[in-house]
Length: 395
Image 1 (cartoon, rainbow, N blue to C red):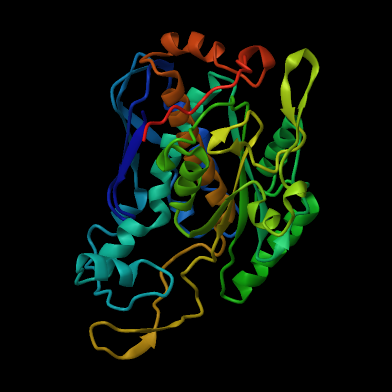
Image 2 (spheres, helix red, strand yellow):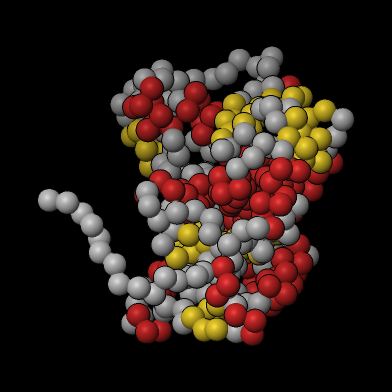
């Protein structure tokens, strides 16, 4: 149902995003996009580029009179920094930096200057993703679905947060994260993370970490088990894993649970008041068989340390073939707090796509009653024949 494209370079005049497949009749304004774009630019350990840019997305298509039309939505974010470069002679860039797309981009596309790789591979592109995600959040909000995030680890400093939480506790984590420079909901861990980043800055190094994105209010039944590319957990992991510098993604605490026996991992099902079927716990992270369970959808991502370091790493000058050291380009020291906001955008996009896939329809008015009529995890919604039957396959 939904798909989006982004275009633009780090030091080009603008970023452009086109979101296709959004329904008609959704209330939407440029102000709806401002908050998340601002959140993406905050966080202790950010680089100098964030002091230059003050991102605002202009809606140039797909919205009229404050509502979506059903046509492609075009979003434009201007790059202020490009004016500082447009009159400059660009010096040759022939020394690939370890950890970046400099060398792999040249191998892939045959570039004769490595700056062509880094301009498009730059995480500056994520501003466009966040704008798209904000549109998707606006849709999800119409159905009571909330997406938030927080940081659980930076540079080995971990916030000891319980693996399971109630919706109210998750919302409290979201609120506390907004008060922290490192987006950590625990003040003591937040202070320790900030100190760890400060140490890295003084050591001219960089840090990675782990963030968690949680979606609340997601109905059961989104996604599918019948095809590999319709499994919602696979779509979520692929989307979040596509963010720059993300090297690992899990649903729930999958890597931790991999060391436990099954009886300690799988969530028991019991019958609650009124015929509701509920799970005791949420180790599954909100999905079973690639389909949402109705519990909180929990996606965790591991971000590697930023590749650009003031302490240069060994490399080779492709123009001379001689060993040398990597050249420093302005960058962050730690981008985990900012990446968490990008993670929200990608999770919101996947969930919005899955919701529209489930509901069908072309307008908000058309899909509202379909949402209310969705099958839930309730005995009344799940009549069983309870009769013997045969597969009926022929030889």
